[in-house]
Image (cartoon, rainbow, N blue to C red; front, side):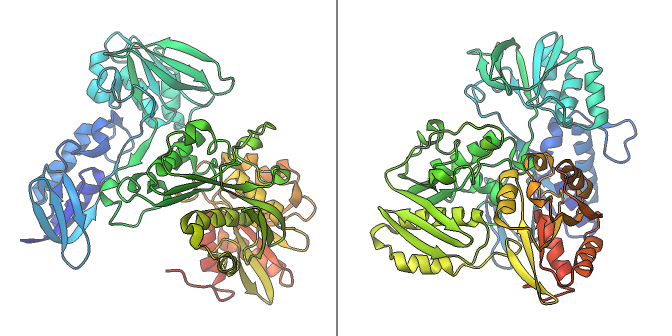
Length: 562
């Protein structure tokens, strides 16, 4: 039988899809999962921001109501686990442990799961003191001392809920202030049973058969202390349940750690670890863990940036089974290419040189001298920006590792010199006979390198910063960027959702600003009309760049990206 619609997943999105499909007389089948039915809200306490529930509603109650509504309208809920998907062709196939379903349309709504700490003993003690669900397990910790890890709304929800049972609740957070909404933070901070361990992270769990305590490390000083506790509840974010679709749907870079377990790469190039999109990837150490999982699943060779202290550390490389290659820059340029650590410290970790190393020896503008096998090789790039010279060095190292003795050096350098800027990443458009350059900026080190790459003299400069999901919602990284180079020339326009955050940051560096407006259309018009006879450069976050390219199509030819 060929069905109209099959829905994989049974969280709010899955049941909402089921309700709409059922009302459209499409007879949807919902494959809810044998254990995960109801999704993450089944592990949530009180939900206060769902419309229609004045007094709030418990997460499990809300999901039960959604399920009942979908069933009343005609949805068929089946508690089966999907094991495989075939989405090619007009008729799609969904395989479970019990059957193979065919449908004209498949809706994927697999949701997310709890992020783990990733430390020794966590899996062993799960269900024996370590928990991810306060509503499920809170009752079992009556009159006990428990710990909640996290600083967002979910952590405050769990901490507040657990005070119904626990003698005391300690909230452990990596920073000195909460990320939670004001109302949730206030509620937790005013609760007499809740205390806070600021600037702290859990680094060790104690107990054999059950949890007896934890070790906390101060994120500022590095000091460690033991905290007695019999319960540890984790609320450090969610990760997408994407393993099912890793090899059938296009995924972004955040999913690499998952699909490499199913589609193992032969070669991996690891450029650097940056504080980029903290809301998606977590803290920088977690980003390093994600890259480490890519490396250990690589089968033939791993090329890493020897100048990045996290990628070259013994903890990172010791369990990588594939042969290691390295790339980097001549030590005399180390200050030009800062790691995220060097933005905060003058200390430089000694880099380990692997047997076969590729090095950026000299550079000027778009010319690079890249050294390997005891010889230097010159290449001129179409790509502007010194960060592209560093990336080119990494690319050379990767090609050398893959091709080995079959490498034709001249052909490689010729191909490298022919690479054109990707859209919005140094892309140059022509407006009224003058160049307009789009420079993508996403993290503090990258923004610093971009500013160091381009002389602002005689250019009209615009900065556009958004905070959508693809940009990263945490804009605190802007304060790690030095904007002194823009002082003399100034900035014509500042725009985007976070225009005033950006303008404030520039004010602190005494950078003159002509115009501030959150509306990209207005700001771009100001830039173009005020400087018709002057080259222009726009530093922009990802979604701001996409929006600006659409707006620039009104003024000039812009390549369509499909």
